[in-house]
Image 1 (cartoon, rainbow, N blue to C red):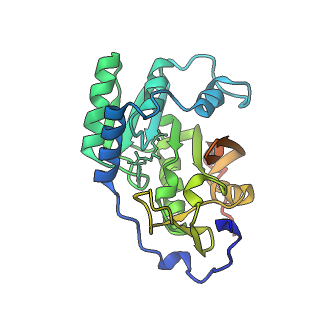
Image 2 (cartoon, rainbow, N blue to C red):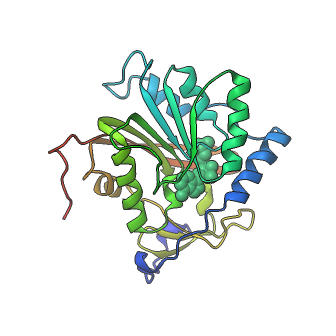
Image 3 (tube, helix red, strand yellow):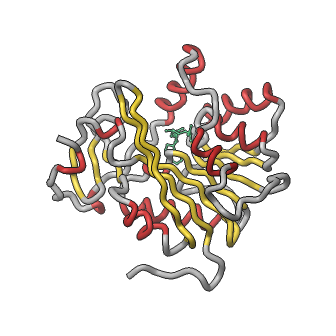
Length: 255
Ligand SMILES: C[S@@+](CC[C@H](N)C(=O)[O-])C[C@H]1O[C@@H](n2cnc3c(N)ncnc32)[C@H](O)[C@@H]1O
């Protein structure tokens, strides 16, 4: 049975413990992929399309001099491409090892970026600073409604009024949910034996209306897209979200 159709909504989101940050696992994972040559070494195609395609009306022709923050940049595939676009790139990761490894990759590619240790909930930058914020498969590491909301608020804090968010997060048919248990509203316990996150609980948006509900108070013109790929043995399903940080006076509270 698919995870989303199980009805066992007994765990209130507020009762969920935070997942451990898994700094070592992520650091090792990127090092292993670099050694085996199995990791993606290219930017995510959908992010490229969102920046350069005709889907978002007000994207500038030139990015030179504009600031972009890549939250949870991982091995930096997207950040490198953002550098190539001419953006002034900043990045945050949860561990110093991941930061150091990407610094070497940046240096050998001849790019410069400002990298720091931080997290969804703690972005070490001043408010109203960025023109763009990229959160690519990272927000769902906050696993309660309260911390998801806090992450969205932290993203909004560092964006300039009118600055644009680009976000991808797990969709309802994504491979990570194979064998998962539904343990609360939007809450899923990972069940895959081959994944280091087995047993941890994640908050995933079940449908676009929830994305509008959670992002709408701080972001205007929210659009929700989706990519759904079946790659022979696994399904990759992601929500894509973009919107502009509401300018002063535009903020509204959902009641
Ligand atoms: C699925 S990977 C995505 C990496 C990269 N954004 C990409 O698309 O290639 C998730 C990343 O989020 C980072 N991460 C985990 N917990 C985080 C948190 N609470 N705040 C920010 N980043 C986090 C991990 O270290 C990992 O690199």
